[in-house]
Length: 88
Image (cartoon, rainbow, N blue to C red; front, side, top):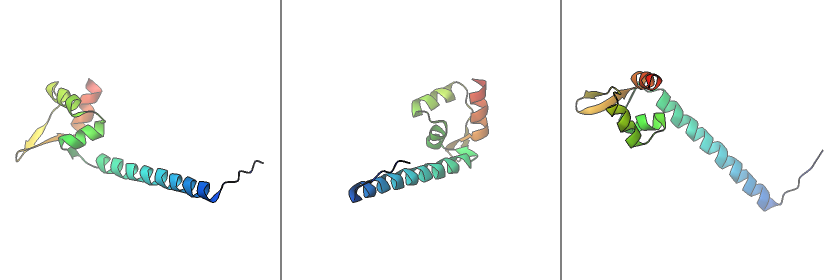
């Protein structure tokens, strides 16, 4: 068995690093879960969902990705986005 001894400063630093890692992971999971629970996206969230740039998403739309305009707001169906990606 190997025993590692850390100074108080090292213990505090390691604890801070672990706390930040766990907190960041939880926040990312919450953010990802909220995107996954949506059926429709505005463009910004659709880009985040696909992890693509605004320009790349615009190319998808130019290539036939369906969109819908409701009261002047453009939205994208999650199901149609998935179908588009699978077909292209």
